[in-house]
Length: 191
Image (cartoon, rainbow, N blue to C red; front, side, top):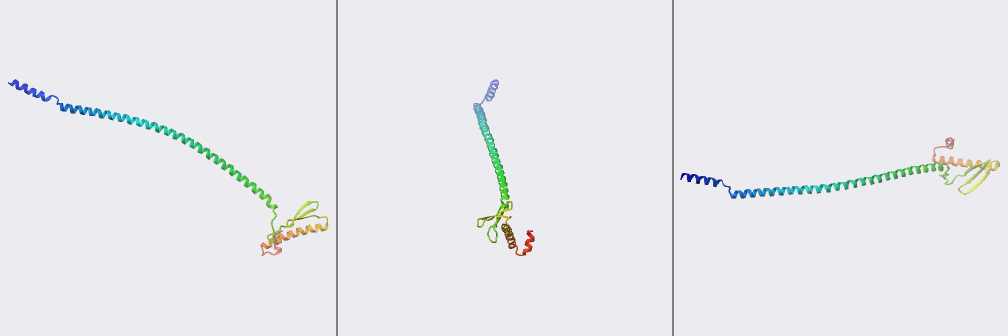
């Protein structure tokens, strides 16, 4: 019986060491869950990598398009700025040249301008030497022109009188602007 007790104890001992089906089922379920989780994580990693690759492709395409657009815009901008600068330079040159022509024309015309007398509001007589002692005496107020010859005594007196009247008119005009001067001081100023 001792033997039987040892065999029974050994049987119980071996029976207790036998795998528990509940534990086996839990282990199988845990393994299946881990494999499923690993497969899902791998699939998510592959999807993320594919999405990242698509994003990077689109980003590269957009970057290339943006780069081409920027280069085109810069070229067009430089062309516009160059044309505007050239136009501005040409316009400025035309203004400077036109201003120079205007100043030159004014400098040519101003000495020949006949101003009105400020007091009488009349134009002065215009004596013009024609050559050979002949003068043309023009009165712009009446439109009359006299041809005078200094070889003839009366004509010479008329020419002298016309120059005298013109000189006296200028003298009176200057004196009227400076009433503090006497006629002799005005003559000294003009001499």
